[in-house]
Each structure stands twice: as C-alpha cells, then as structure tokens.
Amino acid sequence: MNGGPSGFNNAPVTKTFVIASSIFTIFSGIKGGPDKLGLSYQDIFRNPRLWKLILSVFAFSSTPEMMFGLCLLYYFRVFERQIGSSKYLVFILFSVIVSLLFEVFAVALLKDPSANLLTSGPYGLIFASFVPFYFDIPVSTQFHVYSIHFSDKSFIYLAGVQLLLSSWKRSILPGICGILAGSLYRLNLFGIRKAKFPEFTGSFFPRLSWPSMGSPRGATTRNVTGSAPSHAGRHVERISAPMAPSTEPPQDAIATLVSMGFDRSSARQALVQSRNDINVATNILLEALSH
Image (cartoon, rainbow, N blue to C red; front, side, top):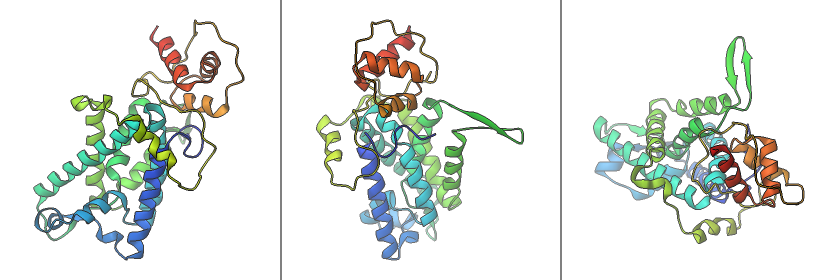
C-alpha cells in the first residue's frame, strides 16, 4: 500500500517534519551524540535541558531507527491529505506534547537516575498515527503465507513493531505513550479533532524552499469531515446527481480518493461530477455513503 500519490503531494507539513527529523538526526550524529539524546530522570527533574528535550522529539538515536521511522512518517502523510494540513498540524502538536507528558509521568514513576529511560525520535507522532491507521485505513488486498493471513497493512505493522523494539525498553515506553496520545485524539478529547490552525499557517509550509520530492503538486486534498470514514472501502453504489461534462480526472486525484478507502470507479465518477475538485468529490462520496 502506498498511501496515495507518490511523493509529498499535498502533504507539505509531513515533508517539513521528515526533512527536519533527518537534519536533526544527521546533525546530532556528526556531533557524536544521537545515542545520548534519550531522556532520563536527571534530564527532566534534576538538570532540565530544554535543547535536549526539543532534539529528542526530532532526532533518532540510530540509522536503522531513522530509516524505519522516516518510512512510516512518509506513509502516514495520507492522514494529512485526508484532514488537511491545518488540522494535521494540530494532530502533530497534540501527539508530540501529550505523548511527552505521558513519558515524563512514566519517568517520574520509575525514578531511575542512572539510566536513559527513553530513546529519542518522533515516536509519539509515529505511534499516535497507528491509531487512525488501524481504524480508518481499509485493507485492500489479502494473501496467505503458509496458512498465515496477511494484508497490505501487515507491512506497516511489521515496520512499527521493528521500530518499537529497536531499543527495547527505551523505545517501547515512548511507543506506548504515542499510542495513548493517538487514542485520546481519536476520542476527541476537549474537541481536539475540530481544532485547526488558520489557513495561512497551512499554506506556509508549501512555500518553504525544500528540494522537490515526488510528483508535481495536484489539487488540494482535504477531507472536510476531519477524518477518513470508518466504513471506508465499501462500494459506493450510486451518485444520484447528474454528472457534469468534464475532462478525464487526473490519476493522482483518483489515487488520493482511493487511498481514503473509496471505490475507484465511484471516485472517478465523483471527480467528473465535481469538475475534478477533490473537496467537492469527497463530500459527494460521503453523502452517497450516508444514504
């Protein structure tokens, strides 16, 4: 499964976060300290260092962790396409802050000043993303290996398990805290799923002069409902409104709607009807599913 169109098409916040994480990891590696960025009881309660706290959110502690982590962040760009950059930025901040608070609470309970209890890296965001991945991303293909059932989602789960166990206890704790943060976001704690930054904030990220990665920018993809439909993957039987004459929908727009769980033929029909406006097409598909 590819999470929609290739590259960081319509996912500027994800692109910025991935590049920032890569830069911080490489920089800390040059300085000889990625393995020293893990947080301990002393770092938090006895000798607080804000710079280390910030770096620990972005910089992975090893190259294998960085490779698995960045691949997962790249795949999870599908959620930014679904809810829009302004809401996804809220999801990032909520996941990072809440998971960090859980980590601080866990370190306070363990009270082991002699060891780094938490590995560094954006574990909070990555494992918080597994919550909507589990509930909102449908299975598109299934297969068997020696009578064991697998799906296209299995590879994402395996990458997550590998990252979770990469530093054993030091990575398991941040991973669990991330899952808890993602669960609270899904439960809409304090109405957080309706919160979003002003539109000009979301439009700031595409203007950053990062190197071009992926296909050219297409139409903006934002699901105005705030999340992918939980019944994603069901066939949309019929779109009742008459279809307006239009050009053939672009393949990347169709792929984006398919990545949200809609049937390919229904996605194409909705795009034709909406004159290739993905926002309108998404609303048409959701209204058809609700009938």
